Length: 484
Image (tube, rainbow, N blue to C red):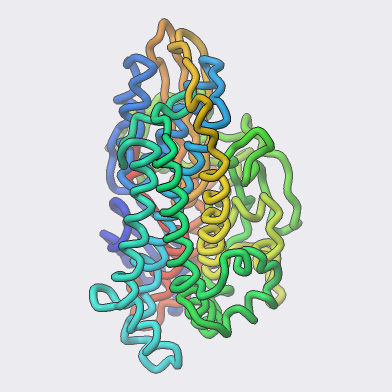
């Protein structure tokens, strides 16, 4: 048995370290460590309740608006505020723009460059992929970065600035748009559609969003575009057999409107192929292997207390659990819970292998979500009614407890807070990467990535094997949120 440590991990938001036990050229056991502590939960305690709207977005510079949305939702649960329809639409537009931008960054700049390594030089697809996606010299960056910048303009129009906007409030969105700004939004989404339909998908968005079966996906993969190129190399490398794990998939729900959420909250069991309601009360956090003092497992009651000397601890992340079991989150969970037939079929597919997620379906779900969100955001922009309010007055929370649940790009994000005399007594955050990159729990059960790495072939490259990189990046980690 050989023990190898990989860290710091590049092209990751924040600090990540892997400890891998390798036997006979494969990972026998993995430990995933978040190596940084930031203490936002302690910073928030003792402050006026509204300070959460200023401080929580600064947890992260790439999913800042998602943190704003969760903080506003938690305060809304205490105050009883209800945003008007325009407030919901505007928040959805800004949130979708942030999440699409994250998906694009991940696909083009974090994930695909790993396939430009010399070890793949003999593959038939290599010249095309290296020319497009190689770090620094690849042609794709000059296409995607201007398109991504347009999405940031959307957030500027709706939220005033990005990141760390104060426009998202319990009562809605403080920045009311005028006719000119609405038309600019529609024009930006039109330009962005043109980029997607020319470069990423090389097909109309409606056609891409309508792909419902693996067979239809295979047909699409024979065409042009960067997504089709990924699908071909993914099939060649059998990425549907890499990084497999069969855990419950959890979604907190996203993009709410009066007629319901675009992605509902819930659970999907990949082994049984069944969806069910989300048992919010079953969410807990275990710290058996975390550099933290023992505390309540209930996020509504817990207080985060660092313990850097804790014996056997190896991560600053907690271990979120659902009814005592680990769960995976992300775009694949959102779409499986929502009943997407393509994603559910890819999860179920395998050569005698029980249903579960893998590198291929995690990336497919993320890219397919770009098409679906772009279409939805176009509709939301057109639906804005400029003669109506964007925000309602929300009384300052005085006493009570609330939970704010949203879906960041990387998955389920929850804020639990309690308020007494207008002051935050407790604030607990369960972030998407905390779910996926959690350490072991008191029963010794590994987190999702720790399980997904077991069995991965390393060969002579050891811990630097490309397969290790592919599995880790398929979850699109954001360690700064994990170390909040």
